[in-house]
Length: 525
Image (cartoon, rainbow, N blue to C red; front, side):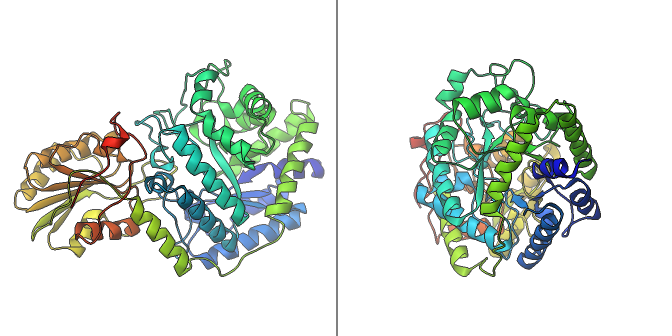
């Protein structure tokens, strides 16, 4: 292969590896195919110091082999999608921040996140999300979105962009032209949004237009079919009509277009990762993610090289995209700014303040737990492939059992009839019931347990630890609390609430099953 062409192709590809240091397979990809960029996941991260060492080694290798620095990318959205270590500062997620009612917190959270990333050696955050979560059955977006209206998403998303810009971190809004109105996760299937351009311009495209007007440096494409925009049965990432025709020409975006991961089944299963990458480059995507497999990365690099050599891909377009990437690296990746300025007490206090103000009392009133409360609900589990790995710290029922007098019972993620009967029998001896849910609106067993426990007519509270839609159809006497994330940090705040030391002040940023937002603003102690 021609070395200069390999370098140009390598500038446009982002790869990954599974360990806490670069794998031999990834090092070979950099040396042989000049792969110049990395995506980090939670399994790559152990401590802040380890992450700094890893980022330095990535930069040294890539610079030696290509003459340019590396984009070191990460999905540090906050909340349910966080990758940074515990000795850093992980902020709340988008919907939680919107529940505070303060757009300034979106800017502050992004600025703190940018400072953390820069200190640890990461220069490119794949956030914020600009999707409008207007489909309650959406299995992959949910609380990762700021809300279910264009106004909320635009307001908070653009405030976050200000924070990233202030912090000097490259940010990418996603998932263009909108992943909110789907009931299929593109990690495991191929979603379809059958809307016209006029319909999209009236809703989904509104936050993206605002971000472009503010000069957002990067936009990530979605792996979704939009048949009214692209009749050829190919997803947005592979569609020149959408990437070049709509995003670049009609909306005037001149920045970096990046793909979602091309190993997701929406591409890999239906089109093939390498073929999808060639099509995405032809469509106008600048930077492509093959996030996990070294063999697929090698196959993709070779396929792209062949496509350029035979004229299927334009050399001029290859040079233009590579030049765009190198110019951005000169700004964001040229100099290492690794420092010890991460995980500060001030940042942690600010994160805790935002998290506390995000909790919403959706219905009912708080009540004394008494001497024999029952705490129940499922343990944390990986709700989608975009989420963090399961927490191994503790479960909600056992955390509360250790904090209060009473008993904790951990359930399966969707309890069946036998388990439900056993928990109801145990609850008969309790003075009150506190149950956590985790995407219960998508798991019938959780909601069946809610209803069965509610029939005991005891003082009862349901705490939604992810999407708030679990709280939409609670019996009238059951108190509902939206808490947004299954973390120890959130459980500590909930313990204060259950003990009567804090009354939630958050406001719901989405409607629950069509109920007006104004009707969902809490109760009294």
